[in-house]
View 1 (cartoon, chains in turn blue, green):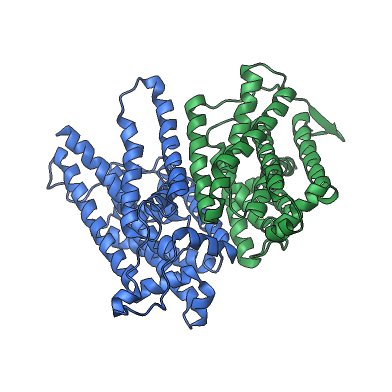
View 2: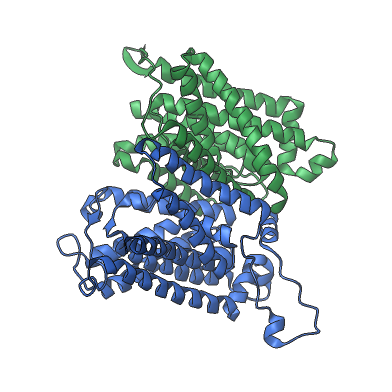
Length: 329
Length: 284
């Protein structure tokens, strides 16, 4: 039973990261935005949920569902502001701006004690349906909940990727100027997708709060952003299946080493080893499988319209190529 | 007044830390996130020579700068050069992976405790009867001035420096004109990593040595380079001073913990008002 609870905890964490990776894939993978602000929206979602649901005087004491909806709305509004100010910037500039916003959010959370209770944060937070399911089984139930939401995220993202909007997003990623020249509104689309993806990340923040049952600023360091991006790169950018698999592989590797029984004096070595292995994995995948474990596949226009003989449509280009073409701009 | 001095010192260290980053960005066209971890390596290397092997501090400094420079070149040869053809996104993520690898190795060796070099506190220099800065701080300022003038000399007067500037503008064209871009990029990696190591040591001199040094600094370094205008060395120097000063002077008005946030606010403002940075540069 214990091992089952432990495993389900691991899967729940993997599922949370997989949801993050799927959400990030919408703007980072399909649209090609270099968004390093993941942890910022994640933190805003988690904090707004906590502050809305926790009892007075710290919070408003709203019911859980209101907290979830509220956190999505608040993250959406904030990302609208961030996106509006930064989305006109290109590649590296966007990367640093979003990164800067995420850091400002974290520094704000650890300093404004009247709002967030500073570095201590809040603990002993309620989990959904906690009263109906007794102690040990709760983790199993929660894992199921996470996997169910992951499935919803996955199918939503998949539908989006196959929709005209998805093709349009890829077109922007491949060549912004050409897409603009055929009369598409680049900035408005980017902003829409950015807000959508960030709100999805904000919602995952609620799951993270339930999983940890505490909230504190040091849970939201840039390591999370890098982990999610690493998961995406490992699995294959631009591809939802890859995002899910990458996240689970990465979390399994990182967390599995946590439970190797070693004497206490080696625990630091082990912690270092964990970082080392994640980094090596990323480097090796990039070197030998630059498209990730699963390369991006297109449901091409040919298939949709049954143009079997028409060879006007070019073969989709790989991720490595995309990067090169972005760099050339 | 003392905040201004602190700001200048922070700025001087930032100059040394950012120039290398900016040079790599300019020649290799990617953000080398692992640059922050080179600061960490330099600082711990100096700790190894100074406090473990008991070398004199000056010797320890020189040795660790050389060692970091060579290590930086080796890492670039092993990790970056083979994936160069796959584009800048791959290079960027390789550098993130490399940061983790370095961070993990250093953590496994040194552990989590916070250390210092254990330098004696030096005397204050008195000017017009008021103590303004210590010899140690003067030393940092002089070193960064020396680095800046040395680099300026190399870039404008020597053949390799001119070659570097040509390569930064247009790599292919420079190659056609007979510039050995392979050799030059080796020099760039040596100088960049060496400077990073030096910056790490100076940073650890003013504060403490801890594992997060690399991750904290890389964010500020990126801000400096962006504010300075992409890959523009002189803009970078100016930006380093501006960000250093505003971070430390701002502590008079806002709580100290917001120090880094100030740097990011500046970056966001600069990008919104002048997306090309303080000085025009680069092909963007």
